[in-house]
Amino acid sequence: MASVVCCAAQLEEALLWFKADLRVHDHPGLHSLFSESSSDTSSSNSSSRPRVRALFVMDPDVYKSVVDTRDAAEALASAVASLGVALRRLGVPFEVRFGRWAEVVPEVVRESSATSVVCERECSGAFAQGVARVAAGLSALKDDVDMDMWDCLLFDGYDADLEAF
Image (cartoon, rainbow, N blue to C red; front, side, top):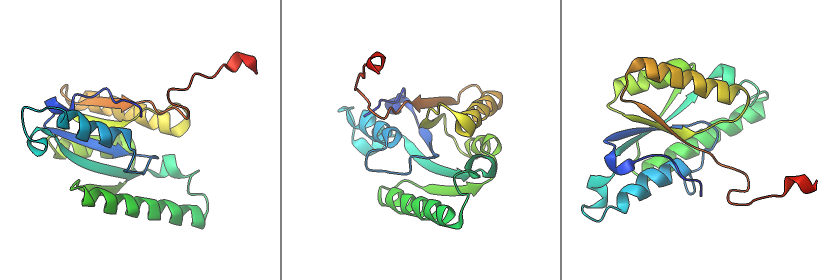
């Protein structure tokens, strides 16, 4: 599993921003926030774990190519609804908002006491551009909010010899 550059034991509240990876069972950000703090044996898991809020933002500019058909839109809506159910089972509040990432994510941070936005680093296209705009918006918001990101490779830990091709 990919590691998140995040110090969960030092966080009071984190905003876990879901974009494309809408699973819970092997989600690197969620795993990091829950497991790093549980390795602290000096206190109970629940008291050392940061408060975690989860967020999905339906940005029309980013998702327009993803939901280009009615079936695709329904599939995304179903996946987001399933994510919400799974997160609530874990005791993680989940919110879905509509709007542009660059506006909504900083707005949610402003409304909360989150000191970290945890999300996957995006490498291309509208997703990468959107994350960069959110990072800029957060840096303008206040200095004590970090973006803690992870990289998830298709073959994490696998070194392919690409020169052989």
